[in-house]
Structures are given as C-alpha cells and as structure tokens.
Length: 164
Image 1 (cartoon, rainbow, N blue to C red):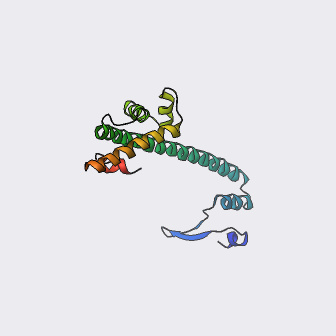
Image 2: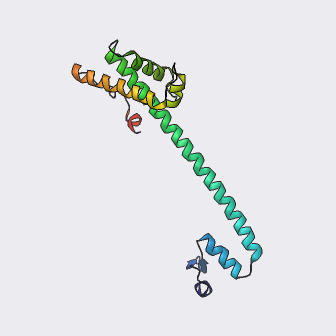
Image 3: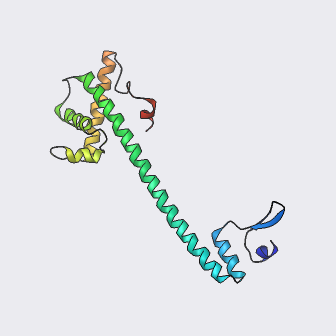
C-alpha cells in the first residue's frame, strides 16, 4: 500500500482468507504499477488482454443493443397491426383510400419496419408518410369508437404490447 501511495496509484488493502492483499481496480493504474515494478513483460500481456476484453465487451454491447432494438421494433409492429385490425372493424368502409392502403400494408406485413412498409407501397412512401397515415387511421378509428361508445383500437392489446 505504501509503495502504491508513493507512486500516486490508488489502491486498497483487503484481507482475504487471512491474507493481506493490495487491490488496484483501475486498468491504467495496474499498468503503471506493473511498469514501475519493472514487470515490463507483464505490462505487455496485461495491455493485450485488456484490449481484447474491451473489444469483446464493445462488440457484445453493440450486439445486445441491436437485438433489443429489433425486439422492440417487432413488438411495436405487432401492436400496431392489432390496432389496425381493430380500426378496420370500427371504421368498416368509412375511411380514405390512402389510410386503408397503409393499414393493409401493416396487416400484410405485421413485423416489417415502417421503412420496409414504405418500400412495399405503390408508389413507394417514406417512413414518415407511412407512420403518419397509420397514426391518422388509428386516430380516426379511436374518434369514431368514442362516438359509437365502443372499445377503441387499444382495447385488444395485452399489457406487454403497450410497453413500447
């Protein structure tokens, strides 16, 4: 502990199973301590392993992030599909054709992203255009459901579908 303190390296003393140990948690501090002790080969091994761990950790974080986004996107698409089905039940034939087309695209491709739905449209639409049309379809159906006194488009969704 005294050597670490004199070298300006933050360390902690711990007793583990009756043995005193010095613990250095910061990776840079570990490298500095090894270098000051003259363990240059150990520094090279430490830095190589540390770099490998960091690269692996970054790759895992990115993979988990992408996976979570895909799951969230798919769940949102399925929930939107269920709401569109209910909107069609509520509105029947009382909806503009462009909203019907967006709704039919969502029903035909339940797990597709908005961007993918836009590419499938004829003529192709932007992601924002598809989202706007589906949003207007659902708002129109919810307004009509309120007028009729019937459950709205969210009535059939399970609680996990609403967690978006």
